[in-house]
Length: 115
Image (cartoon, rainbow, N blue to C red; front, side, top):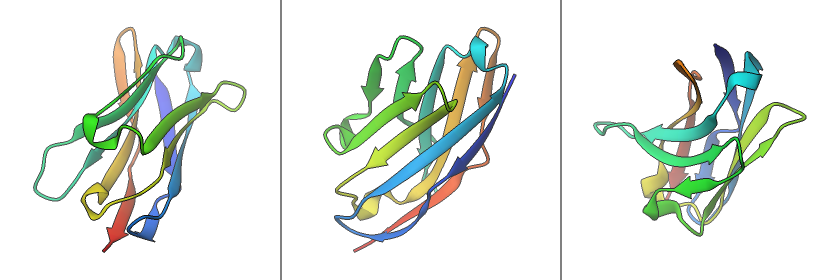
């Protein structure tokens, strides 16, 4: 299994930027994919972006062209660069690591975008 610690959330005005970080420890060599999910109040958790072990990426349509997911293997860290933030991006953002027989989550970090 993998332990995940997120950081980088906060309060930002619409149009601003934030970078989220997720540091992984534990059985990192077993990770197949890492992703960022978010959950807004009263809504289901949704996938925002995912990066596979080969480096391929995928994004939910609402963030395409604004968010970028990347992975630093040397630091065992995955990032989510968020630009042109909108109030509807406000949510708790969770990091996820998926392996052959597990799906582990971080504790979440709050992102609030004011209009």
